[in-house]
Image (cartoon, rainbow over all chains, first blue to last red; front, side):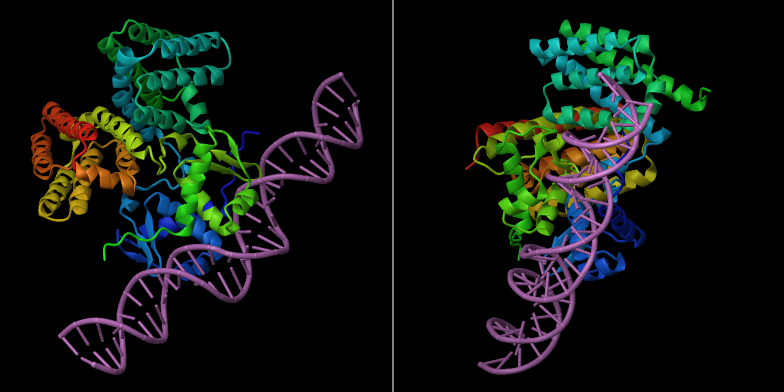
Length: 233
Length: 233
DNA sequence: CCGGATAAGTGATTAGATCACTTGATATGT
DNA sequence: ACATATCAAGTGATCTAATCACTTATCCGG
């Protein structure tokens, strides 16, 4: 049912192109083989190859110049993930992700306390109530409810860009990572801390809301760090 | 020489697809017409349409599910299309984007001051020196050099996730937005402020580095805010 | 030495057919 | 009546091979 979509030919092609660029030691501005040569080398037809090229172009990895050639783009150096779904997260990245959230989410909680509308506050309460309902339910559902709380809090800050950033960070806890992550959930503590954050936001106390969000995320990180070193049976 | 490349059919298609999604009032998760129908409606052949679809997929605007259909992606809301209101949309988005950077980049500068390696510091110096070389050169080149400085500083913080976030924030500006942005560049001031940030990082003073980065971005935002209200002739 | 024609190389697009996958309806068995 | 298995329609993925459009460097005439 929840099978991960099998990689398509074009997916694989995109990766092989990136490999070709990196393994070849190509730098931005370098010219790559022609479409005809590439389609031959990878044993695919022109239209298929072009789909992969367009994806790479959209991410800035390459540049297509009509009549001239294919060139390595400036963004090539920071591209590790051609496709959001083909990313694998390891322990270190998990901690990096938590650190990222520790940087971003506290200021958002503070902004939410300052600018959040009554409707958004009500929504946040609903989300937390839903999480409360799942306190004795399935792990997966509780975990999702908790993530939704963080999303709702981020939305409340009223900055579309930051909201999307948080959204994508939380989405990275995809199906696979979710199973790993929810092992670490401390059901009661998470709920209590979320509640205290909500109260600070409702009180309009920006500094307190920010600090509580920060403390909450640091707590989560601490637990994960410990269990990464001492894996539970 | 520096003519902007004439838009290709596939370019136009990508825009028309965005129009179709927005004008249709589609929300993330909505299903779009099939490839056959789209290729007919736009009067292009399947492979051409697919190139446009792959680009949209790469930016998160849509999602292609084999055997199922084409669906609107979560990122659709931050993707802008050229229309009469574009200027204002860009304005609002621009300020949100700046606010996002004000939240994220200062802590990164502080982290860079604490953990940055000598190699990364050297790289940062090279980037700034390159910007200095362009102080009297082309606007576009100077602008790119300045963006590179921010990228390099973000990388120096040593958090792969946050580095990617900053990278994507700086990349989101498509060609159009870049032209708008670089109008606001204050060549000398930007360079000086970058230099002061670099010095704070080199001194290992995390608090100072963070504060200077914050002040720098607030300066930039202030200029943009003023000119948005008082467009220069 | 310069400037415009030119030819080779390259990306862009076309056309219709076939394969592979998903999904919901139908049929089957218990 | 319900669960499971099967199937068919709809959809995305890929193939095929040729032609069009653009860039670039070369070469020729002035």
